[in-house]
Length: 371
Picture (cartoon, rainbow, N blue to C red):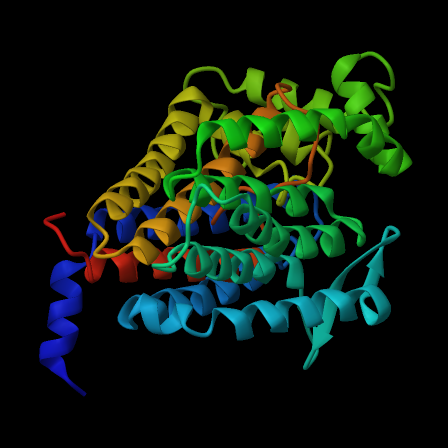
């Protein structure tokens, strides 16, 4: 074991990022336990135990990627991308179906969600492609090629259906292109095309997805059906007050008004806000702010364009997840099913997020300028 090499890695990494990651992960385990806790003589769900296991796997991935050169990892981008596409196709045919959605594959008796790892595949491929020295960012052909790299997995994931996860591919890709010098006019054109396709997109949505949007527009449309989770989430967040009701004391959560099927996953922020109030919520958001600031600084000090684009894409991905999750729990956006990074329950999401953050740490360690 090369102790000098390990010391070099430890000295150059961003310890603020690592600390924020660990605090969020540990807090997530506690709140997942709370989200499955009941003040009756019933067993507590073992979700929090499984989350601990996935967190340990994630830490292993984080350390492994941080210790390895991100350029070496990106050199395998086409292979990683191809494997994720194969898995996305397989899940449509042999995936495990839950509530009509086929999103999971059973690999060695472990449930894996390929869509989460597709984010990493798209990130690596688009960043590597866009960092080519002969690439002209003003040429529309290159832009179409980069968008096509995100479009294929987007369509496969949306087919599962999992539109929320599929949508995360676009902010990440567009941030890379913007940082990579794509002219604003092309991004405006893309936005206009997206707006024109909204009617087509509406008719391609499932009934439950349309109901979520309609409930967002009219909160009283279906208060005991499609609007139930949103209403209970808003009550939970609002009732937390300044300092919250206390750990394991959130009535919306513990009494089951906020359904236990979604409280540990999509609505973990509601549990935090009810039990720890405004102070706890802001503290959590500040920790995400530390992560995002580290991502922005990494993009600035990266030693090459590849590192800059990877850091920008990861930062855009994390921001999108946090913004959409918090916004939907307080009623500012439709319910999309996007989890909160490092805190929501989910093995594939935990591991894929930690791999992205490990890649970010690798860029920081091998930076070209002073951090």
